[in-house]
Amino acid sequence: MRADRVVAEPEEPDEAPEDRKPQSDEARSAFVPPVGVEPREPVEDEPHSTTSEFALPSGLAPEPPPAPEQEGSAFATPSTYSAKTSPPAFTPAYGIPLVRMAEDAPWQDRMRTMLRLPLADRPVPEAARKTDEAGPPVARVFDLTLRIGELLLAGGEGAEDVEAAMFAICRSYGLDRCEPTVTFTLLSITYQPSLVDDPVTANRTVRRRGTDYTRLAAVYQLLADIADPEHDVPPEEAYRRLAEIRRNRHPYPGWFLTVAAGVLAGAASVLLGGGPTVFFVAALGAMLGDRLAWLCAGQGLPEFYQFLVAAMPPAAMGVALTLLHADLRPSAVITGGLFALIPGRALVAAVQDGLTGFYITASARLLEVGYFFVAIVVGVLSVLYLAVQVGAPLNPEGVLRPVERPVVQILASMVLCATFAILLQQSRSTVLFATLNGGVAWVIYASIAVTAGGSAVVSTAVAAGLVGLFGQLIARYHHTSSLPYVTAAIGPLLPGSAMYFGVLAIAQNNLDQGFTSLAKAAALALAIAIGVNLGGELARMFMQAPGAAAARRAAKRTRGF
Image 1 (cartoon, rainbow, N blue to C red):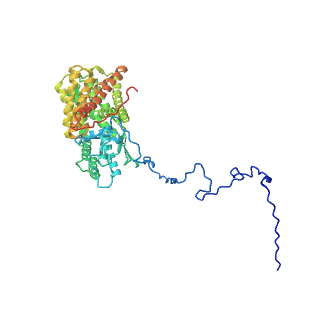
Image 2: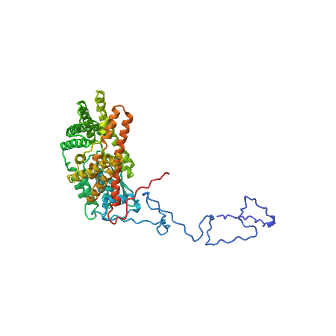
Image 3: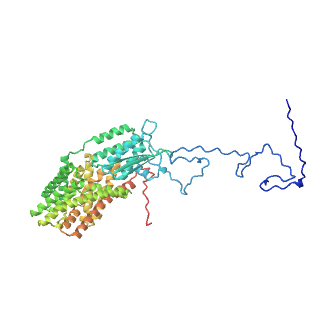
């Protein structure tokens, strides 16, 4: 075996420093220590990697990354919010008023007051939740609230009163953070359990209306029991009573309503100076018109055509008396038939909604009243136009002659109010007071307009104001709606004469005089509605229950800007 021989290369002698050649800039780093400077030994605790000037100083731990946010409500509390570090809340200079509701005040006043307050300023519920479950049954309470609100709105109640009733039901069952909204055909209610929960909303459409003040009074009795803290009315019991209210028949049959319409027209004709013959002729014309309206309703025709058809028979009866040359005041016959058709109930509700700030509902109601007025005018105008063409000697001035028969007219006004109450399907216990209230209204009107020779509009407003005042007082005493005590009592004040005079002038081609009279009829109608509303507001303002600390706040409007 031969061993390999390693040949060592000769070592080169070291070169002197001065003999070295300088390196280029690319081969030499700016951070290399210069020649002759010993490099510093690295410290073990110091990191060997190069750090940025934005790096955290030694000894400071970095913040942990934030947890991923979960999708939630827009009202959820921000993650950076802390109650301990939050800034102090702003308090106005005048302080935050403490609202306390009097327990002995009517529930309508208390609910109206709270509806006017912001949601954060409303007091806590006075009554405990009337349910055995852990939480409030939102779905059942909403359904019950909307059903009761539908009955009230369909019965002619004002939008503010319907909202107060809906709010009272929800608040009685523990849903205090709710907001009801009422328009002409739509009811809606929204409930938000807390600021971190999503709101719940339900609505209901009112498609059919019917006048039945007996049912309205029963609904108000149910509302009073639900809102009373001393009564325990669970949702099941409220549902049972509501079903009984809806199943109840009307207090008066159809034929009796037709007779009542005839008696109403006859009483109105006597109020304007007619005698017994005029009474029976006007009653016959009104009953024929009522039957024709029922026939059109059975065929599914809209109410516009029902009013149009119902206005034609009384006008035809008046024209027939004129053609017979009988001095029986045919104008009183036609005017008496109009008294049974003028929509006083809808007019009062429309103006009341407008005065309380519900402008959408008020506009819709006024438009409905306008359609009814147009239907009545078209029906009467068609008959009068044919009468003028055949040469009937219609005397427009005959309707303006004042007749002073105080005892007869007072009795006629009371009969008119009683029959009007029957047409509104009122209970027998309320008919008497409505009759007396209407008699007082006619006495006030005749004293100012006829005896003292005052303005018809002013006298109508004053009489209607007393009707609203007395009606609101008796309604507050019985804790029910004021409509049964007010609507029938304004019957003698309805502008039937001015409407007939305007239609007759238009038929005789006296357009300026006719439209002036129709404008007067509209002014009288508005005076009635405003007077009734003002009387009710006066009753609420000066006849509050003792200890009522919070009054209903009205909306503050802009004044010129």
